[in-house]
Length: 367
Image 1 (tube, rainbow, N blue to C red):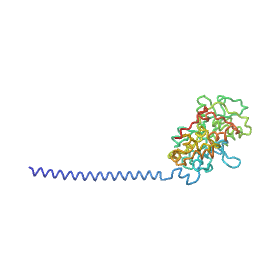
Image 2: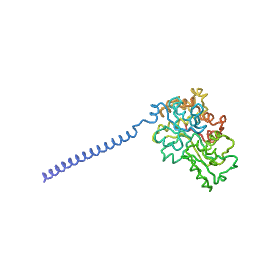
Image 3: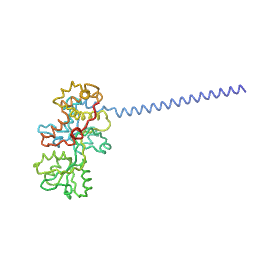
Image 4: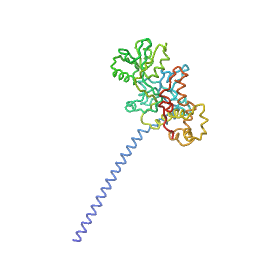
């Protein structure tokens, strides 16, 4: 009995060893499969991200490719010397200054409203700075990230002054021109549907052909952002013969846009833009920036790059904000240079004033 018991114990022990061996093999196989899967996933991830970051590509190229406008005086247009000028162009220069200490390290690639998002998605441009409205669909479905709003606007309508039209209701039956691929199409339809107004929408591929049709009289009115109406009114043969209706059809927050997938690049565009607003709030501009270099104010010292590592966190020099202000200026300087009281547009800042001056322009802390 004792021998039988020992025999059973021996058999049981052998079976246990065998089972443990199998379990070990199974565990090893599973682990190996898991490692292979992990390796494959890692390889796949590496393959997906094997391309350089946008910042690395930009630095290797030596300049930033910016999707812009060449038909909107005050914002993006080509001057008599063949150079790009405007509010949006200056924000492109802000990025050049932040990354290269050179505001001219940019290439403006003119894009129509229809072309702009495709160019951004495919990598033809690094950033879109072209009077582009921030919406849910564009933010999500088009795979874009909007940096801070640089210009708060609203959609308006221009008519000839001699028509006597002063309200949307009086545009019943009118032929209204709209640039295709813009939010103005849907906004116009929404507002006129709400008011029960029948009208004829006439689509154009670009603003030049739209304005030409309006001047020729083939359409009765045209619509875009109010800033755009003010801009193009200055180019009409008789600017004073036209009027922009007081009613605002929509909210149009305009600002730089980047594609999804590169948080570092998004952060760079975001904080370089905010630097212009923060500088204005701190009273720092292109003429006095050197006076703040030795400031004892910790807020200013961080902003100037004298303390902390805010620039390094972004992949930039710590004094990137100083480079921006020296080369391009603060927000107020950019606005006044292109749109302000000394320009043909004479646009009041309104909502685009700092929050401390009754506007809604606001930079998060540089901390």
